[in-house]
Length: 231
Image 1 (cartoon, rainbow, N blue to C red):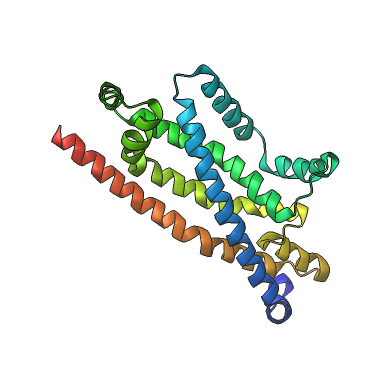
Image 2: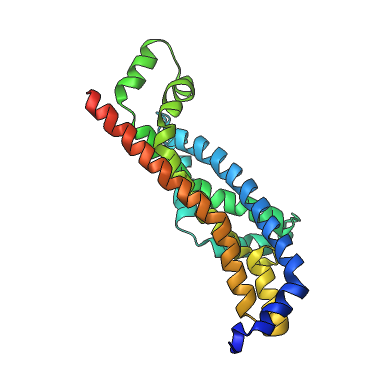
């Protein structure tokens, strides 16, 4: 094999840059985990707000969701990286990645949460209110636990997308997988091995998540069919 995939290119890549790719892999995992935790917290907050009887809460939730769902992640990362220093905010690319990616995917998962809340029978709300529960207590103790099996599959899909979207941090020297692959390719004009390796590393993270999402979806469908049969 010749060209970009010649054997000597692979040998040179792994012997001289293997450790850097491993570090980039671990950094990508760290960014993904922190961003996902942030996204989950935001999604619950804004998902609950979106169904509130308070018009201001619903409006704030809608603005948040619409803004992040209708802006490319790449532009958000670029603007924030260059804007923060102008207002005397100094953040490392790692922190910017965690925050922006978390905010971005929080908006998408918030819609998943909103759909999950809407799927619960309204009688559940009425029964809770009749027992003296407040809206937040109803959400915490009655609605959110019931909707968990409904929202987990699409949330897992969003988690896989979040991992892949960490690649945009290559633009701001995020030192994640894609940045490491591009750096090696640019310095050696040897793009084949690092890019293929990057793809494999993303696959290693995303494939188990996607597989888990499919299993959750099957369990959810079986549970919903069982409920339908009981009725």
